[in-house]
Image (tube, rainbow, N blue to C red; front, top):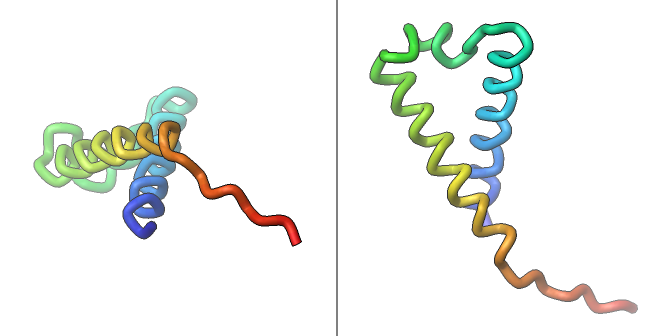
Length: 69
């Protein structure tokens, strides 16, 4: 499903950003879009958060069992 892939990509971007904050004390999103309080940065942070919530649903979905040939 395309929404799963978009949300997974946003979640990975968020994880990499948090990694850069933790390791280098550098917020990539804030640096690119004008600080943490900038509207664009806040929209991106919100989208990443919503994507993370969407990805939680992946844990609870039934996966189709592949048929063996």
